[in-house]
Image (cartoon, rainbow, N blue to C red; front, side, top):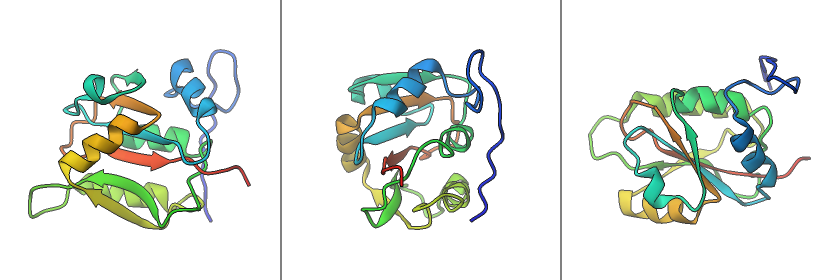
Length: 151
């Protein structure tokens, strides 16, 4: 396993990437095993599907994944690493390959990526612990990950 974590400093903590806002850090800390977090692209209707909404304006989903995955254990108890919104194009979004590259660097991140229809994805997002609204510009970039346990 080759985990490369770039150490950055927030104003008052060491090792926390600057992309992780205090509000997002609080949500990540409060999540328990099996809780899910949604990263919505710029077109995702985050406000209408969120039980709890965190804004991450100006940030991409890939940058946020790189920031949180050194802190966030993925769930070992399921057979997938992440959930995607099905694309209605013949070509998969390029960003899906980038997600796989990022996820495989972490324990339990080398599993399949599940694809759900738009309706199923929205339904699941509405039950998630949190929706993070990003400025990700690529279409069908929405992603759900599930929290595991610290081993």
